[in-house]
Length: 472
Image (cartoon, rainbow, N blue to C red):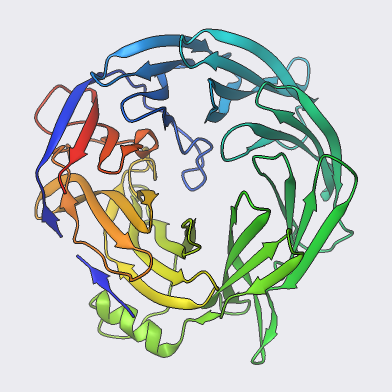
């Protein structure tokens, strides 16, 4: 089945207050280090990490009336950046990276805050390395209760491995570990994932982006479980490789990998592949490959009102979403930067590929949208935010439809593919300013209630923090 979704409005309840926010800048608009700056605590309360001035952050808890129950200052040094923010059961965690050029060092530091009072409970240095080394990174589990700090080891231009340390949410060290990389030629891409139990999954893309290896590590012994698959290679007399790769880790020792495959010579997209690595059963299962056939490309071109069939371009994997019943949805998004010194960032159609619990394709569709933002804002406001409720996926996008700039709500059913038209939330956002919305502050408190930080069209120049209750 294939569906195309277009536009509408709806009534709702909105409460808004002034919100102080210092506009952040980043050199990498495609891979923002902090994509979520708010977490729900219950149906009324939530916490936010925001920058109020250069280097001055606040961790704040808000209640039903949108008044701050507490606000704790987090002052950073000039060479210090926020790398991670997480909500745990009773605490909030902020991890920063600090560079000391005089000492020639870099370090990851953690701060823990009490969710009830905002009190800072502890500060701790988690890892240190020479500043000339690769940037120290950290991976967090879904519930924030486990984290893995990582120092990439290299000899000249060759990556040798990762020196890692596993911590629990109280910042107690669980295990030191070194992940060794295989001897390789060409490119190597590595990523560490950690589940709520502390088990680690090292993904390695090697052999010029053709072979994917996944290693499973536990903290009880030195056993390493390895599964590998060739995602690229020679197919129908052309050499294909992995153009983009996305992972989704579940809490039952399974890892899903989605890959966009392209022709190495022409760069044209060829297919979408999906693999499930199940370490409970030591089993690897493949979904049916989705081929980007001439017929599929013709339908996409027709939906975009193109007179001739065009190849896919600027397509990225955006999400792998899995329901409790095992329904799975892969989302791709077209994202690019226009050419020229005044080029704008663009985020256009979403393509959805659905699978049932047996990894059999069930439907696919496309959501049409056309978002743009100035270079200073990048993708901080455009693209989308999503939340799954049962088998219904809620999507929020900043768009201008029928002359109205607003957040638009859509829903998609994972089983049937049935979808709703976009409905305006009623925030009436400005469309003549550079930065009018930051989607990293948008979270769902309940199924029909979400928060947003935006600039209204007819109000003060500053940002507003809003709670929006959508009517059914």
